[in-house]
Length: 254
Length: 336
Image (cartoon, rainbow over all chains, first blue to last red; front, side, top):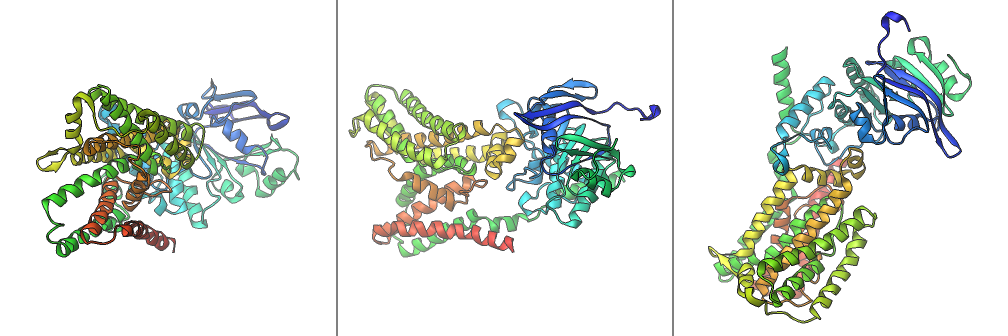
């Protein structure tokens, strides 16, 4: 990295491993992310992507290695701890409540209230307003009062992404955000990712879809059998090379 | 730029898929209210000497409260996607606890406290088995249906109690008295309905109840206290059953171990007719009231019109199926 452009990495993993008994799901993986960087995390099924992301999200601790946020060692023992440290996750199944409004889902578990103590009531006007602002930042046409069950796949993604923005996150982990939606909506979601990036959020994009990673990614990291086999700038790589790395046709690159 | 942004933001925030008129027209509760009004008009014409009288109004409004009070409590459980089959037996147990303690000299206040505590114990038992031991709600509360009534029989030695000690007349006034010509239980029901409506719509607890019923997995991932909320809803349901037991004891002036038998089915019917969904995620306080009211009007009208009481079950069953048809039609439409 050129000295003049040195920035403090927002998230650093140093020699992270996760062993489940004899199974080495993740082995000695190191990586770092800068603010406003989109990193595609690729690999075949069972390569260790989910395990790696779950450690960052606080679902379980690594067997060995350190996680640092803005240079500070952190121990993410619980998803709530990860969230407090500024790490948000968009789950593959989105984890939304169909029977609630977009605004209610954005604020789920972090409801805005007014009043004191046991007498405090939900602050509907504030939550509608704030959710509307977040959708606008994402350039999404999602409306805060609409129920999730009436929405398209792209709009649901916007709700899930807006939810991560509520706390001004440092890192957003996205698990297959474009896997189950139509082509037109994929473009919409990729735009949301760019909006999020432009606010200085570092994004880890787990995806099987090569075109999406090459469309929005700055870097691509490839895992194979729990090891990191590539960490390259998108402009220095190609879909062919990444495919080779995923399948093992290409052993490893710098 | 700033002004155009804020004005269009206002527009987006204000926008909704449906106007309030279409929402009302699509609501099952609204159509049940329409059905009740139509039934009242028809009955007033068909039985002009017996239906539209003050005495009958007094009876209907009092009779519907026992089902309505429990339905208001059970609405919480149903919204989370659960069910509480034990409410009829809980009503019996808490009535017996009230009767036995007061019979042995306890004051009305103390009797009510013991009675509510017995309800709370049932709710905690149900809730802990469902939330922490992951038993299916149907199974846990089916077990409790049997256990609670059995304990009530043990507590009372299966006797009929009709002497409630020093506060006997206060208890009878509580459940059987009237204020401004309206039966006392009606006031308790209305107050409870307002509280339930408020909690469901305006509190974080209410929001969590809906979220758990909508997508329990999502609620867990969002960090909601899912197990705690589940225990709480079963406690609310049992406490409502205990409250109904206290009021009903005051009205009847006697308690047998048969009280509340089969009541769980009436209560579930009321909630479902009022728009609560047994798969979870939907239900309102108004719906519980309206559902209980429709059941009582069916019961009342069959008597007044001289129709054989054996037909009651057929009418109530049909009401359930017709009410739910509204929801089914909408779902089939939206699937196209």
